[in-house]
Length: 333
Image (cartoon, rainbow, N blue to C red; front, side):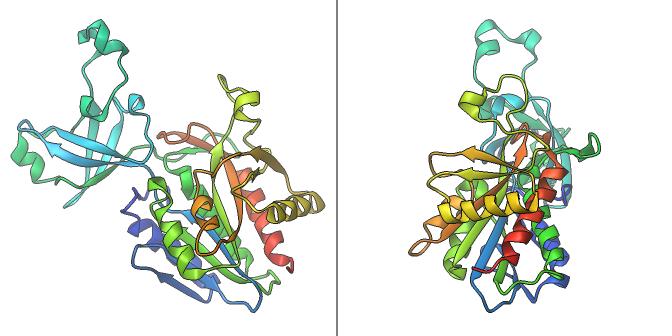
């Protein structure tokens, strides 16, 4: 799944994999007109929707010059200064096209160039095309690309890859779906892989309006702060391997948060607390305000180096999220 590209607006391959994985454990899997994938486990109790987003950051080809170099626009929040030298996979008309993001070498820059904040137009993608015609035979304007960053297991629990934001959330949904087979619950459960979260949680808004759940819980990543330059007083105290994160703030229902914390304590499930005093940058932002309002929760997986090709998470934190959500679904409202 981590090898499958899913830039915002091009999530169809990853949602197809998600549907395939969840189909044996639920009663129905459907996809809406915008690409959200919905796995439904029928129940007679409250309607509970649990959501993780399927999309990732990426690039879109916007111009091809006469020499065959490609220019691009960014999809989602990308630190442009990290892009030079990165290898990319372009989803071309005839298949994947590999390229590298180029920039004038430091040896040839004057002082003003060396200190400037990069913009996408300062960079290009080199696909080794001899001219515009050859480039156009492989890539068209509007084609999308992702940064290369294949999965690497760093140790027994730490995983490094691109697009762990939020494919680790999809993995939590998959683990939760498997648990539904033995879980005693009356809840009417919807497990959703949403689209276009990186562009403002657009998919979450659409599908929450359609399902109208009694309770909506988003699963996403949050910034780990257990590395140099981070300040616990400013950035919070969040570590890899210490459990899933339960964010507190106006975007989340106090009642749901209290229930999740109580379940974590009583079941010995490791968890962490994060304070977010504003709407979160997750699907929970749109879930909460859909229709006449939805009781909303959020469970986050700590992540180092978010929105880079080398995001790092702990699989133990994902396991704690699965265990906590399973305990939540087991309870009666």
